[in-house]
Image (cartoon, rainbow over all chains, first blue to last red; front, side):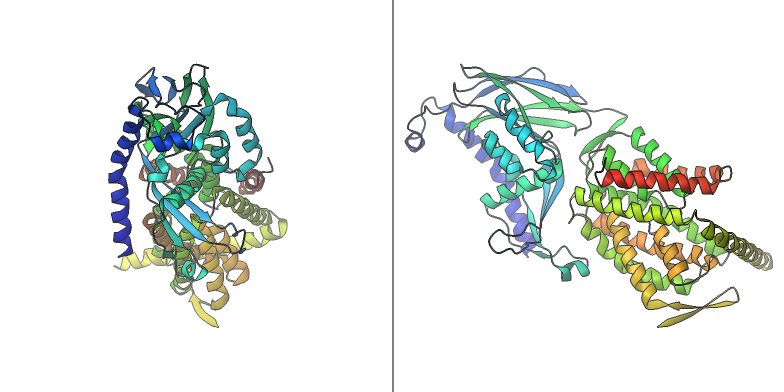
Length: 421
Length: 131
């Protein structure tokens, strides 16, 4: 029932969006006809007029630079909001202790419809502020950077999209659940949480806020909007904003991609399909040779090379080995080389573990994911090193000889049975 | 609690409690991070449970197959899956399974392991942000 309520709320939000947006634009369109209340709130400065914008091109081929020119209000900085029409999932797991109570919230914020590309463009003079936030490293504050640069006035699109909140708990995790579904957020809280989701998705300062709006004293401005290679295709909607009441009409630029580029809709990234193909081929081959399977190397390398979400990588690499494992099981079972009793007993324990693990993937950030993965690789390296020590080698030689002998016997027995039948 | 198994005329005693706890933990971690649990299941069964290699190879693969099957279903259900990415990676993984055994005959497994130790350590260090 809560689900239905949420869906209805999300739907009504989305439906009301074009209307609200139109109203935003209609208000400043009347020249000097600013409501008395707004004028009274800012008695010293003249009210801002909605900026106008033009773009130098209407379509791009796998990214490129769009030059946006326009006219704003003299003395009032203009900000650009650029978002892509494609939607991706973003999440934020809140485990920062509450400043007053010290309690850790353990809440999972899940947004299914954040734009596949989202950037705010701020005046070039704000570059030092961005540099300062870059120095803060991974823990930089997106909302803080938006506020200090003034770019928060242009932040609107992700805050309009629905966010589902789960109250995670140890008990819920044990049964493999994301937790209890919490009531929908109010507008202010949704905007705040959406910033955390956006930051979790795009991670760095460079990929979320760009200082490129060059404004002259007469209020006219130009801005270079760089759409990088490998981002989502489709419409990029550009809006110029001076303040919440002075918003330009949106303009759209189409980004086209063609073979061998392919848009991975859930991952939110366009890739030249040959690059991951050959990388996976090389890594999986090495993985099979060292006897550990490719997942150990494919997961971290894909995360290092491409801007992919870690949960998508983990969940997509897993099924690639399903087929080879199944054929391995069939081959061993043909020569009766499986102890079903042990295999199934431990298999049931693994079923339970495999039920829980995937829920935890989206509860860690990509940095935590990489950190733990680093330690897993050290353990694996230690195991591999142990396998190269003389003691293990001589023991293994004997074991392998026994293994070969049994395999031979098993194969013979299977052949004899086949001959009888 | 011990389980008795019979495998090709030999009898073995397996500590089920330790085996199941170990297998469960390996499954949680491997399904969370998206790798096969093989390299951890083999030492668990061979060293901790004391089973000989010829019992371990096939049986560990069966246990891991259960894990991969469940993990795949769960990841898919939770939306941690991209079909296009899968369609790129899957043929590459299949091809690797065909190429690798052909290369394996020509190279010394000891050197593969040594390269793996070095490669995994370097990858591990870079994941920890050391360089």
